[in-house]
Image 1 (cartoon, rainbow, N blue to C red):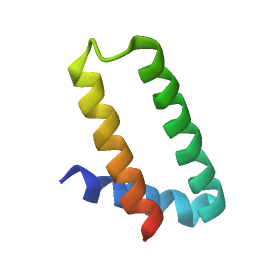
Image 2: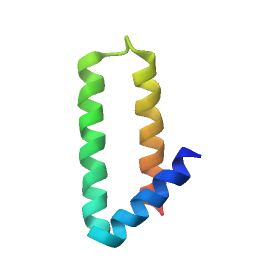
Image 3: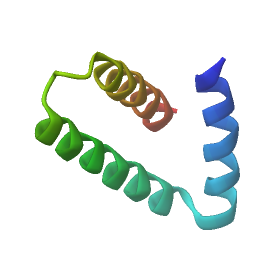
Image 4: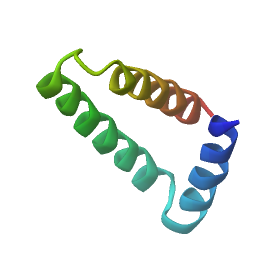
Length: 64
């Protein structure tokens, strides 16, 4: 259900700011999450799950 809610959110952002801005925003969020994972390592498995889920949602969104 979360990917569908995310798609609605990103669609609204695309309509308001444009697709290029939204893709750039998703890139920066992905980069910050990656740096965060690098710093904390794999000690917190819930963060690993959140990181993987977020990447999947971003990939789905970019492909559309």
